[in-house]
Structure formats: structure tokens, C-alpha cells
Amino acid sequence: MNDAPAALSPTAAALCDRYLAARDRAAEAALLEMESRLPPADYLTALACLADARPEARAALEGRRAAERLAGMALQPFRLTEDAADHSHYAAPGPSRGRTHLTVFAGAASRPGTWTPVFLQALDARRVEVLILRDRTGRHFRAGCPGLADGLPELVAAVGARVRAGGYARHVAMGVSRGGGAALGFGRLAGCERAIAFGALPRSDPLRLLAGQPMPPAFDPLCECLSHLAAPLCAVFAEGNAPDAAHAAMLTALYGGTRLKVPDLSDHGVVHHVSAIGRLPELMRAVLDDPLPPGPGARPREVTFGVPEPRGWRQWLARQVSGTR
View 1: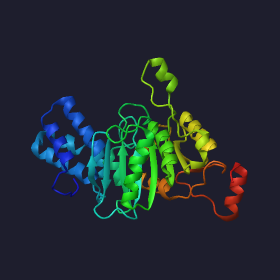
View 2 (view 1 turned 60 degrees about the vertical axis):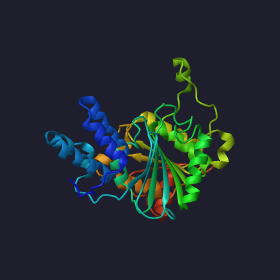
View 3 (view 1 turned 90 degrees about the horizontal axis):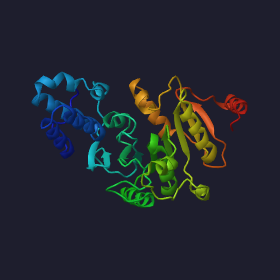
View 4 (view 1 turned 45 degrees about the vertical axis):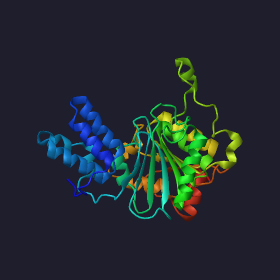
């Protein structure tokens, strides 16, 4: 396994104790929680401690797929600086000033599209700090984030206060699956530089009504009346996933921005599958740093991940042919 600091964070230590006190499914649940909440070095250190305590489980622990993805890498120096059941903050040592604050709205598995240590490893810890939000109620964050804020406007205020106090250079919102729409609404209200949605899923209020489930607040920041607040959008989808492709087209038609198509993939879980082929750092650089068209009123464009855009007159001609500008 990789060299890693010997000290465990309090969260990692508590999850190790939980694993050692458990058996079977409860032990697996503790490992899954580690893969949802720990940064790379902390995660590998926790596995090493467990392997020392349970030699008979060493092969299974070291063979975890998240651990295999990190094997042999120079680990990004993220530390877990704040942790609760529904939100976690990750940062490298040093001042926040000048860094990017990435606010991530997790999907149904309470992860940023793949195992959290693997996701963080795809980022540059010197430039980016990450706040991962989890909505275990399944309400697409419309009631905020439990333990942090009780509604979306309150969540915007709470996170915005952190961003201002930290002196960050950029604020970017990102959402995965059912967190995608939340990232768009949050990005609009919070004045984010951009909003990134991976396989964004539409909200299903009619299904909630039919199922007799509690309804979240009716306020919708994606309303046309707030279009002047729109943050530039990047909607990422798998080329072979028709529902995600259609939803990305709808979002960019309404709000402008870029559709980023991932070729040769049909799975909804874009982040996880791009990570599996070792290209997640490249994808994250593209969505965080590539120029985006402005919001509503600008004609949306579609680009293919891994295929460079043509330059000069070739770029102009390609866009005329494709109907984009």
C-alpha cells in the first residue's frame, strides 16, 4: 500500500473502531462509510490499521477497489478539516485564500459520483478545497442540508459566508445525479463562477405526491424569473445514455452553457466510469477550467470529452455546420 501518515483523523479512528466491533454487513457498512467520507491518505492509513488488527482480512482490505485505484500514487494532501453525517470539508494544509471552493452535491450513494478518496485524488489539493454535501432524505437538497442549513436559501447563505471568510478566488458548484439540479440552483443563487452537473436528474414532485411523501418547499431557483442570476453551466453526460443526453440538452437549451459528451459510455455514473479508465483528473480539469459560454441568451455548444476543439477558421466552420456559435 502507499506510504501515508501514521495518524488517523477522529472520523477515521471512529470508523475503524466501528469496523472492529462489527461483523459481516455491519463491518462492510463501516468500510463503505470510510469510502464516502475519508480523504486519500486517511483512507489508506485506516485500511492499513485494520489489516494490522485483523491479519486474516488483510487481502480483502488491501483488495478494496478504491484502494486499488489509489495504489502507487503520490497522494493528494487533503485533510478532513470538518466532518458531520451530512457534510464534510477537505483541504490541504495552508491558507484558503486564492484557492477554488468546490461545493459538491452528492448523489444517492452520498458520494461525489465515485469513492470520495478517489474523487479527491483527481483534484489538485494546492488549488482546490472541497465541501461535500449529502442529502440522505432524497429531496434533492430542496430542504437544504441537514446539520448545516434547513433550506436552499439558508444553505446558500451558510456556504457563502464560508467562501467570503476564506478569501477564495473562485466558487464552483458541482452536482452528481440527483445532486445535479441542486448544484444548478445553488450556483445561480450563490453567484458561483460555474455550475457543473454530471448526469443531472429532474426532480419528481408528481411521484412524491402519488407516493404520499412529504413535499419540500415549492421555491425553485431555476425559475425563469431568476434567469439573470444564472451561472454558466456544464452538463456532463454519457453518449449512450438517452435520458441523460436529453436532460442535458434541455438544461442547456434553457440555461445556456456546454454539453460535455463522454463517448463510448452508456452508464449514468460518468464520474465512476471515467475514474475506472484513469481519466478522472483530465475530466475534472476540463469541467473546472475550460472556458464556458455565458448563461441564457448564448447559444449552447456540445463538445466531446477527449477530443480537442478545432482552432481558427476550422472552429468557425465546425460550429456553423453543427448549428452552434
